[in-house]
Image 1 (cartoon, one colour):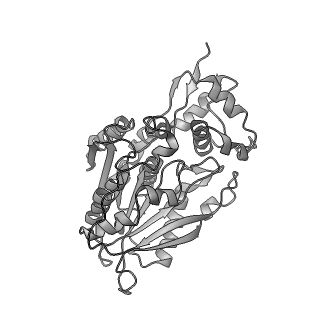
Image 2 (spheres, helix red, strand yellow; image 1 turned 180 degrees about the horizontal axis):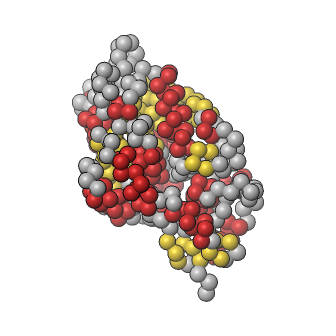
Image 3 (cartoon, rainbow, N blue to C red; image 1 turned 120 degrees about the vertical axis):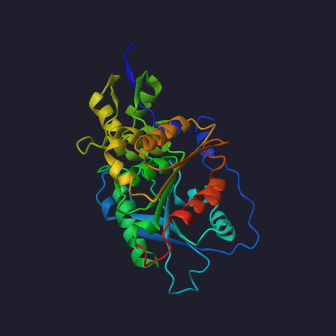
Length: 358
């Protein structure tokens, strides 16, 4: 038997192993509406990403973005607000992510329970293969720079924000948790507080036997349009390859897979490993020390809890203060509750709300 790569996309093979993939994305416990909650205003906008221009997949450079403005925003015209950027997981976009965290209800509930008012921004990062991995790739577009530069600049220009890193928070769930980890480590000059929810894809890929059916399925894909008909995990493999092993000389998908005609491709595996936060986190200790606060959470029934714990251990090893919680639940069972009662409270206590304090 030939040895082949078992190139997991961790978020998709472990975190969704307890439920059908697509259904799991939207199954969550919803907190009851909080009496006295005041409505937030929701704006649906397009934000142009210069970092996404010319990507080889043809993913739109103009991205859908949801902006949740706090109850006082329309009346207190001189007031400025901190901003939290919330990143969605694989296979969903901004609209479904809002449904998954039950926004605006959970945002309104957090404010009603005493959280300070914050602007919350949900960018859409879906691609041809259903997810950008928030990475830098000529094939998908540079979503890392889109989030950390293009989007932040647009929001600061068009809304009454406090344009300071200590007044910006970054949070994400699953693939978004990977994005928050990756972008957070590399762009501490942009964000001041970091919340990582059930992060995927933290470890370098392992070696094992890859089912031949999956490999054969991927080899039959001859155009980006073929991706839409793929099974969930096969499509996820293409998304990971487009993000972490792009190849502008390999049309029509412009990516390299870790196996080719049944043979392991060590150079591709090495490129995937280079995108694993548990492998590159030591390079960004100085950046991580700049954060005012860092939190990590994961469910005790989530296959991602082991790697989330390893990330916490790395932070502890370097004396980087961070809160780590394993709560009762699966990958998605508590995401709405966590967002209202933990994420929003965390940023309320860690962001700077005074524009004079930078």
